[in-house]
Length: 391
Length: 153
Image (cartoon, each protein chain N blue to C red):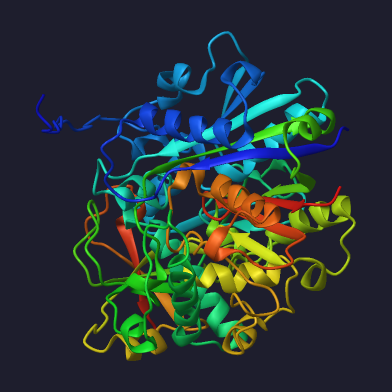
């Protein structure tokens, strides 16, 4: 396998309603990434398109509209879809394309447009089993609630611990010009927000975001020609598990729904490739796709960034803050901006900004290694990537 | 040129007649006609799958033996839905994954007969480990909603 670097990124500001069409959004991010890399569209050899379920856009197979918007005419083009994990999986597909030696430059790009319908949760209900689960109105928020209840019981944490996650993410997002929701919020404000699916309240949940993201990857030889600050993809890992939540909460499978530990073997694969043995000490920043507050508590543990059951205690001490031992989501993360099709790709782009020192007000000083994750479906697809500014 | 932005109103309204398949059809007919909850059992690991599926995802072999489970079980996780979502029943309502006695996996359904006036208290009342029983609806249509859970005490 060849070494692969990220040489350019582009994002649009995330918000619910956008005046650009879907393909205009995609085009905008692709152009920004090319400008960032100092490349022309003719320099790109292949396209990986990051697009989750397209009913969020209200159109089917929307990738077909975007061939021209990503400069894909007369080039290989593939769409990746692993639900919410799509962006992380698309980044991995881009990595495979270059690492394999098949292509020297690949554009990984996509967009989300949720503002055209108010019914995101109705659409996410349609990913459930028609036979056994769809009739109960199960959606992403209730999915998170089921996990939160399991976690709270096992580790004796309270809703206030989840609120701390939301407060930190929204505060961090103040430094991110692309972030959708941001602000300084008090515990009282978060705790008094509307209860949606107990114990998940409004502030524990992400917004319906639209926006676009693009990442350009290149082989080592090309990357060194393109930029003085390549970001190396040091490790990738992915694991999948069953659709059935009821199988994941009964000890009958390898993972426990309440702990998100289906991520763990994916992270271990990525760390092994990256030569990381102590992730909590060797990683300086984590950009996590955790759409719900509880997910950050679970993911920090499942990714080995702290001991099991310790994330909330560390949160109370500021461990995950910008000034803490391991800042989590300097961008504000998915709790502040959740353009589903590309939320995972935006984590990779944000990690690359951190590792090139281009993260502006949200920059973590001395950042050498970063980790990202993406979850999809009923928290059943997990993609992990480790990035570094040192080869 | 005008700065006015035009929106195009449209909607998806697509009918389906989903085939439930052989396995789920047996489950639904037993539920409808005999008020019994039938699960499948993996021929290799012996895991009893509820709701029933025709193969074991862990062993990758068929699960064709049928065993009756319930009618009581234990709450493994729950949520109390207080928000109105399009296409959902009107809130409040409670959902729980219950591991029915004899089953190895948990199955989703409503928990009926609850008092929603104090949500924190209710969350304690239906906490993990709470025992429930299956209550069948009088008029059954061969659907997953033909039964609900009810607290035992």
